[in-house]
Image (tube, rainbow over all chains, first blue to last red; front, side, top):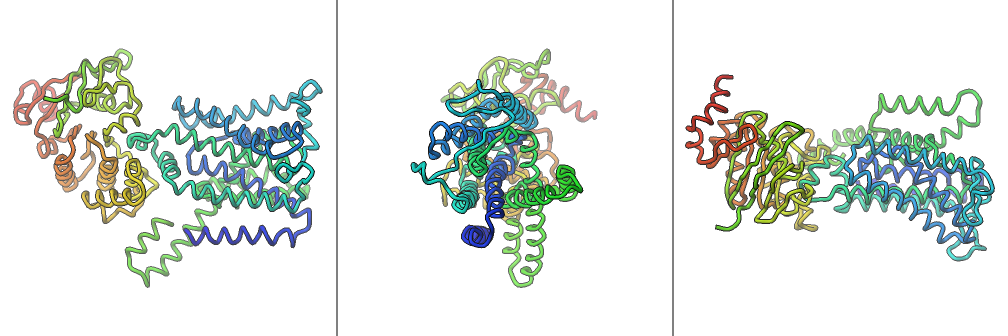
Length: 342
Length: 240
């Protein structure tokens, strides 16, 4: 496990250093986007894959982060505070929603329905704000046209020093790595382990004296904040945001990344996100098949044939293959420990 | 005599028109091992859920060492030191037995102290052989024992067990009875049970429920001789 983490760290840092020097600008911009969406994938992987909270409307937090950044940065002209607002506001929305959902002890399915509904409400509200009368300070909301000309991120407190694409790539990739290792560390703490236990059996956790509602609320707020961060980076990356950030398609896409990559892991969703995003882009360049048809087919195949996702499948296969080799040389007791970890 | 460990006063629960528990007065002393028996639908399980806060009573009170705990959330009741084992094993299926116990121990202990507490219970309940297996892959009896381990790692002051021997083989049942007597050296227990042979193995004092009320209460042999108890429970079971 620690070996795997070290590998991911080394590969991540290597990409961080090597890619800006080797890729052309267009490719670098694409990879930056994938890194940003990777953070979004991790935010849902944390609350759904580990917390067991079925969030069907995760785009609500992503979109809110993007819009919060856009509105704040247009008004303030400097990106430091807007970045923090873009994390805090979705986290607060998630905490508020979580309070009503978890303290009312509604069942998982209704959590899914409520989060989906919230995303739809936000989408429709923002979508109908076309017209000069809808503005927050100097920022026109723009309805279905979205908000163009959003300033890029700048070096903290230096509005004149906006990040170039290379720097934006380093920041996004760095934040993706930070999110990955941050969540890995969090999941190793008592809080993280109790969260996984809640996913396994909420009643038992309560019988042991832990407040499951509070744990879920905190986890949901963390997930909301991370999705907001991804939204902020997305808006700053493209200098543009539209209501599609809130759309059901956006929410569904995150779920597909998780299902393909493996929802019970952290690396799986990132891999799923990169692979699907790349595939969507490739399909988009030709006219033969529609991208949504292909995505739908992929989802079907995975749900039916690889329900756990790629990464758990590979690690199981790899694990049992390694085991069959090690068993010959090691004591059975060690093999059993390996098995439980794989 | 000091306040009972657990006491109920006129505890009642009705679901619509059904009176599941009717004004039950019950008391458990420190150190005691009490069995609750009764035919299906007698209100044992409802009574159990009322004690643990899984459902809120429609009337009456539950007291723990003299403090009113009626209407508290399950985790608050658990924090007072009431450990619960449910009828269907309530465990963390995707985790190993050791990890299951750790979650319980981590509530009170940090770092190495938690690991030590886990190791102590694994030793006490002889879970060593399957401690590092994922609980969902264990046999039914082993899962029940793993759950006992979880409950003990939570360092409770009193333990409530709902049908601990349900679905066990004869050997497993005997082993569970041994474990329960062993646990009773350090912990007071309330055991809800159906299996009369099992009751005879562990019980000293038993309380018989029938139609939401306490029908009889007392020493095992004395209660088994009681004609009313034989009629509602033993007689019916013998006839079945």
